[in-house]
Image (tube, rainbow, N blue to C red; front, top):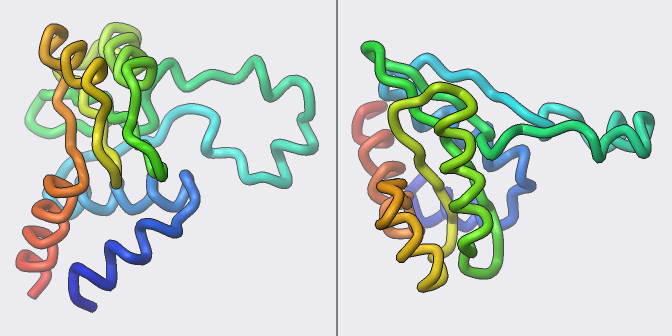
Length: 144
């Protein structure tokens, strides 16, 4: 499968599927990956736990990736609009909460100007669509 076809599939993934996809990207680079937070619950289970779902939190990270002693808090955002400052702030909170060295927000889209400014001030890495494409191409090259 070529990268263009893969990215078309990314654009129609659910949030949970996108998380799994990002996990794959890190695992192929020999990171130890741990998924954290509420997205581990499938929709049916969310309905079952009803109002208690609101109390479950991921503290701003979907994935903790670790390699050679370095921990990265990763927030994934598969969305149709540019990611805003609020989501980048969550990644900063996750950095502290999970005791990570870096925070990273990965999106299949871009970022708002306020999100870009905030990330720059707090040294949070942002992967937009172009960086995601580069990472996919690198992983595809590793596999072939």
